[in-house]
Length: 88
Image (cartoon, rainbow, N blue to C red; front, side):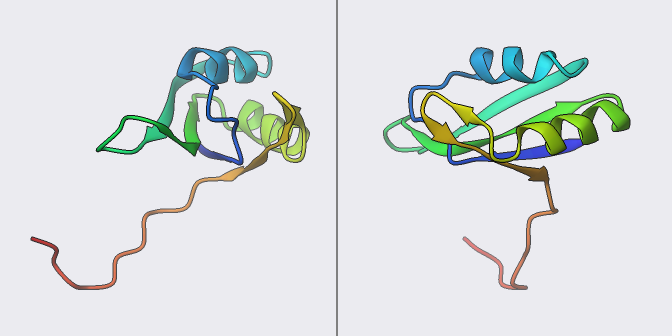
């Protein structure tokens, strides 16, 4: 299951995120989204967990939890919306 994690401190690393979620089960991957021009974190990321039940438990327990003095937003990731226009 792919999990959206928002309102992250800009200093949180992918390793930090993976370690935090690993307490709930096997983490397949953790990715912090960064600005393509300056490489700085955008304050959100995605965690992919292999087991659906472990992922649901992580979502329930970590949504609203504090990490580095910030209250995280954690929920199931939704597919990226497209507006039907092609970008060149």
